[in-house]
Length: 105
Image (cartoon, rainbow, N blue to C red; front, top):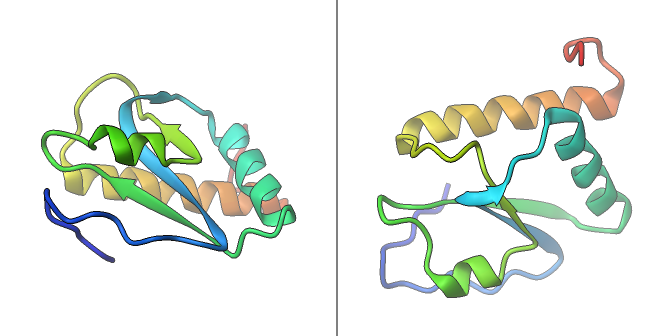
C-alpha cells in the first residue's frame, strides 16, 4: 500500500481507474459498486486504485482527477476503519460479480 504525504503529488496512473474516498462522494450500495467495477473491468481497466485521505481529506486536484468520488456516508471515519470498510466492500463486490451467495442483497 502506498502512502503519500500531504505535499507529494500522486503518481501518474495509466491503464486503470482511480477511486477517491471522500465524505462528499457518492454513496454506492454494494451491488452498484460491483456493477461499476465490472464495467471498468469489461472496459479494459487493469486495476483500480483507491485513495484514502488524510485527516484533512484530499486536495481539489486529487478529487478532480478521480474516476469516482466514493463516500461511506457524511461522517468522518478513522483511517484504519476506512481500510477495513473498503476491504469488506471490495470482497463483497468480488463475490457479487462471481455470483457467490455471500451477498444476500
